[in-house]
Image (tube, rainbow over all chains, first blue to last red; front, side, top):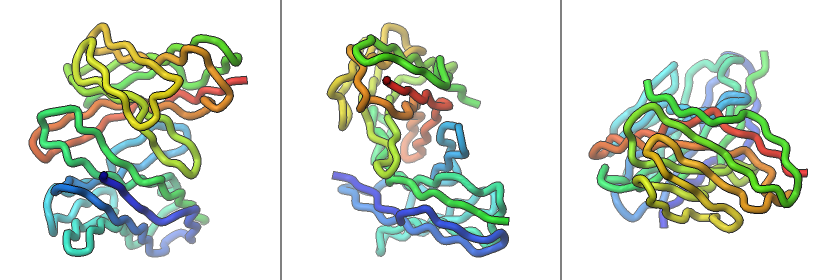
Length: 115
Length: 114
C-alpha cells in the first residue's frame, strides 16, 4: 500500500535559518503530493501541492519539488520565522477524482523556531 | 472558501459513555473523513463516507461507528468510550477533481476520556 515517510522531530532552528524537512513516499500509481501545516490548537491546512513530476509547489516562502526519480517531496524555506513553528505533514493522494480516495499522511514533523 | 465545522473544540467524557462528534460542511461535497491524531502516530483514518448513508471503514475502525444521514453532516460515534480513545479527532472533506485533490479540515476536537 501507499506510505509516506518524513523525518522525525522535533526540529529546532533559529530564526532566519534554512529549513529542509525530508519526505519520501511509496505509491502504487502516480500520486499527487501535498504538504499540510497544523498551527497550535488548529486543524490542518494545505500549505502547497504538486500533481506531476518536476512540478514545484510554493506558498508563504515554502517550496517543494515533486521528484519522481527519488520518490521525494522535500519541504524547504530559505529563512524561517518564529511564526512558522507548527507541525508539518507530508501527504499523497492517488485519487483520480472519481471516488473517496483519501490522503495518506506521514507522521508529522514538529518544527520549533527560536527567536 | 470551504468551511468544515466540528461541533466541539474540547470534550471530557467518562469511560463507558456514548460520545457523538459532529462535523458539518458548507459545500456540497460527497467525500467526508474522520481521522484521529496521536503523537508519534500522525493521522490515522477511522471511517469515511462517499455519499449519504454510505460508509467505509478506514485503518482503525474498532470502537467507532459513523452516521451520514444528510450530505452536509458526518458524525463519529464512540459507542462506549474508553481511555485509549483519548485523542485529537479531525474531520475532513476531500475535494477531488482529476489530479487536483485537496482536503479541508475542521479545527479538531480534543477528546479526553477519564
